[in-house]
Length: 185
Image (cartoon, rainbow, N blue to C red; front, top):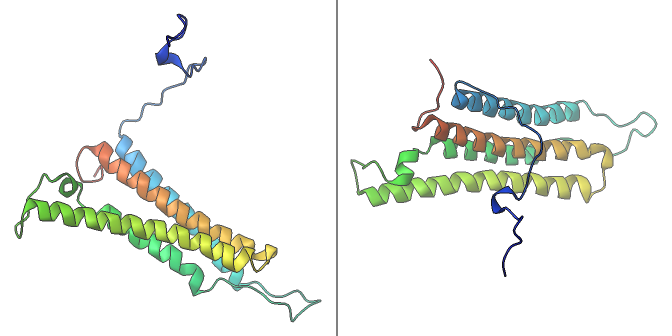
């Protein structure tokens, strides 16, 4: 089957407008600062929910109503995500490619260990996000407390933001061309 003569494979999705190009001198540094901002905003959402939860009281007309608070169970997914973020960004990227050798063992063993630690970091990140969704569903949605669902949603936003922050931070290190983060000193 042949294509019609007017069909240009290179222009499947034409955008008829000119997109302005943004010129940034140090894209890596901008990405590092963006990752930090995403991390701070994500944690702010959860801390806002935790502070709001600490000051939540039952209504005066029904003082014996159940009040749901943010407990330690809500903190566990965020802790796992932060541990995963640290592990992922502490792995030396040269070891993943096998460019450096180790003083105590073969290069293959070092590459294998670096990839194992990277997998563990991503497993912590994914586990934190999955745990926050689980807490949202089991604690706030299935028990049907719609007035307290913000606490669970803030937990999911925190963990998704931490994961996004880790991706942006990893990408910023790749922009720098080496294993260090490209921050001007």
